[in-house]
Length: 264
Image: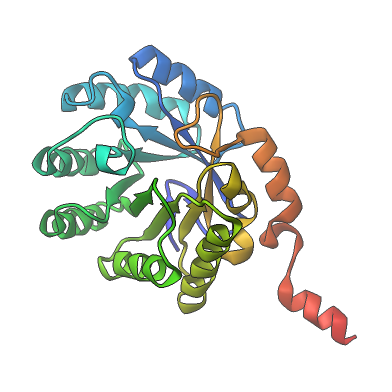
């Protein structure tokens, strides 16, 4: 059972995560307040947007202000690097030192670690996170295109080999076939590990269907906007919740039950 705070991924439908992308402390706290009045389950702090992100002390101060606002929602902490579409560059040493200092504080429920970074430090940080019951989301983002199905599958499986709790991949589709490639890869990995949560999405307007109906293929959490979006194609959170309630397999569609009804 994989949790982000009190939120269990893979249970009772697709979870909604709202990214917070403010640059100042006030903007971030205001955006967090808005997110926490929405129907989201998890809040993602995109710390690479924060104007004082290179100060660990400033990050601690910010997190101590955010934590009381969450009211039971999980907190995912993310520094998205420039190479994968983020706002600020960071050295490998600073990246992992920041995460290692945050992990034991109790201020974050989950951390995002990018797949293509310093893998030796990554393994140590993942082990440290597990010691402190902090969930690890391992991610990879391709803003240029959609890799072949086998490449997507292999990247997700590689994340599992690194003992990530939740593999995550995002791609940029240019055709409807690219969207199908992403969904087929998701379904394949899901079939190999049916009890384990994964997060996948195709970005942009073309990929919106993967955010809204990805659970049919095994997607455990989707990202919606409550204000400024952090990636192209994010659906407004209230609209997203309405769509998920209508199509989510856990909520309204039980395949085994459906098959039994057809037999009878």
